Image 1 (tube, protein in one colour):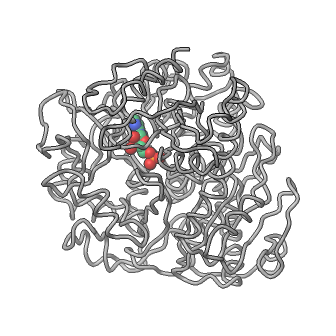
Image 2: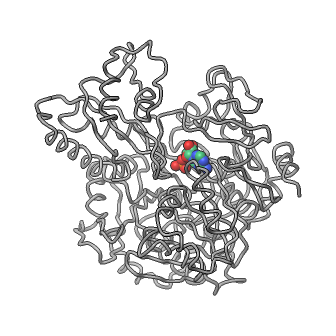
Image 3: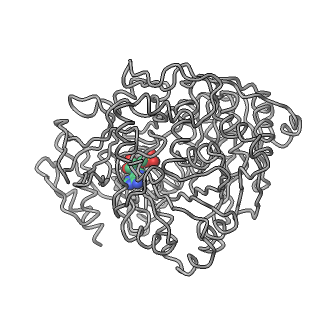
Length: 630
Ligand code: AMP
């Protein structure tokens, strides 16, 4: 079918289109209504339908492919490798569900999952889906303050965690960070369930902390049926950074998400039941939710859960897994490819990659040299796809499963079926229809199935943040700048807000600023994202100290810089650590006191700082310029 017709039907004959897609999943009760758009922007998909994500991901496949691989766990950190069939996964998930229930978890309760990339993390997610508990996975790279704010907001009944993760052979203890996060949070969960990997010693709190091995042994054969949930019930929340320091809980439904993922596996990711899917992301991010756990399993595919670096033991590790497990579709991020690009290209030729149909890349802009290098090296199509935590699945791409169309380097592609994507002027709201006109990328409602329902516990914030930023129009803002060329291909030109993207990880500069400001000798700080050849962007901090005597000489400044970085590591996690912390006597601000972050960013990137007529103290930018050029 021609993609243009497929797309047009998804917008113009929306209900019929999505009623067809809904047939891709199993329903306990069929939906009564396809899209309830009566209360925009709160769109309800498949109302009246009853289903379950875990049933679709696991139980549904038992009869046809019970002995086929479902979860393939590979850790180059611990040397562990294990394949779970759908039948084994089914048993493990029921054990986890029984343990969660024994710890008091009921339908609608939250379970916060703070875990490394181990099978138990996947069991926990699926177990929550099974019993209708709402999971909130927190990326294992986050530290105590990030954790505390999420615990506080999610108010979980149970927290599932582990003794430690491991990165590049270095053990990263989780338990002390979790304990500190729990201490800082005013909400205290009833129970903490801990997987002991034997990597780091754990202090346990009697009555609160429970051992997974002990409890799962008690529930070895317990059967826990799937709860039939309303399609519009909540499946999970996932925290993401925005312009304020407080992370937002992106809330997703059950039925819409299942349908969106099933459809995307077919139309975008070219996934067939029985094949293997390999996403190199982490369960702490949205890609991990959609395309490590739920998407591939819903499609009846085996999914690889990989714990480790892309270059350890060597840069051939991922390709060796493609050969060994006959990976059909692979999903990664441009930063990972840029890391591999620095290694011997012979690794791309060392293994038999004939099973691979395509490599999908997302999470940050895909630059042309990187795209060309990996495209030439692998000899398979490289498909860029643009989306967000909020959307849950691609907004822009080339849906080759519908019709093979060519990609253009530098462009993620065209609007995906279901998404009415427009470009509008940021202050007039006027639609920009001409080619190469730069504006904000927005989505006209109704947003498609799988898209966030709201901000957890904060409908007002959802409307205010996402649907009220364009004057005179109720459209969803992506907060990305974009243009569209004469063929309708979109190009993403960076964020319109203070969110930065480091190695495909989204970080809010305000969160980093808040963390740095908590240092006793920091009076004020500005954090900006600066272009970086490897990571896309890195955070750069410019701070004003309270007591300048602490900066006596270069050594003292370095010491303070080290202290500030450690503070960020300890509170937010090493992912948020700025590349540098530089000290200035004054920050560039407007006369009304607004930080001129964009001007700082421009100076750091060697660009023109733009209109500075409103700047309070022009020497402020000069100080930054001198530091950057030194
Ligand atoms: P996250 O919610 O962490 O997935 O981050 C979403 C943001 O990452 C988007 O708003 C974009 O700024 C950026 N992004 C994601 N995918 C792409 C892509 N394919 N090309 C350009 N930017 C992207």
